[in-house]
Amino acid sequence: MEYIIIIIISILAIVLLKIGLNIHIKDIKNIKELGYNKELNKIAGKFPENKEICRAILKTLKNEEVTIEETADSKTSLYIALTNKIIIANIKDTFTRIQTIAHECLHSIQNRRILLFNFAFSNFNILYFIVAIFLILFNIGNSMLYIVTWGILTLIYITVRGYLENEAMSKAPYVAKAYMQEYQKQNKNITEADINTLAENFETLNKIGIPFTNFYLVTINLVKMILLCILALI
Image 1 (cartoon, rainbow, N blue to C red):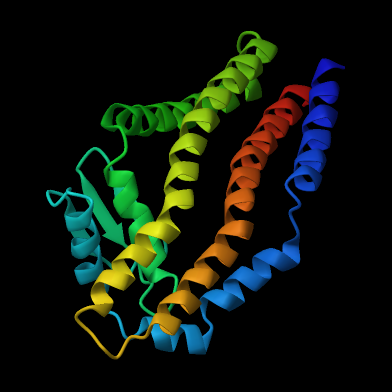
Image 2 (tube, rainbow, N blue to C red):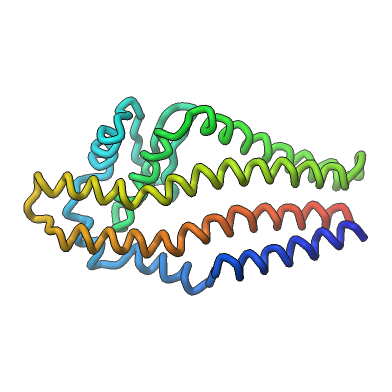
């Protein structure tokens, strides 16, 4: 019975979070469409290649020791704290590339102890989840204890990861705009209107993207909680 209660509470929490953060599926679709807007991409195309943008932003942030790697095989850009490396995904055809690069550069200057903790703890949490599935599925030990423990570990993970992501997302538009303004001094083909247009759309993306990222981070883990409870009921 207690597992069913947890499932109901988890589903209710997802619904309330969706309402509270004003999440709409159509907004996510609009973000994807906006990212590939031809006019905005044309403006963004006036700026240098991704690696050059990344180096310039890192220089501004006084953190030039970061290794930069660009790959066409990945769809997700990320900063790896363990190796101090930024991986730039295949984002050359989206105007959001400038803000995305700024986002990863901002990760590189966050508190290194927190970054390393997040890296280690997130991997530990994944491992614990897999082990919990095995133990619950084969009815080894106390299933409720495993579920509660995983829930507490996940709360810690969400708090740390959410802090890192929210800080980078909220600052990225301003860092991106500062970079564009600095680059404009070298390239007269870029107008103030171009910069303002991109900056305004960065803000538009963030108004939807930041709440959605928080919603997704919590929801995906509540779904995992539901899965563990279903396995315990079998």
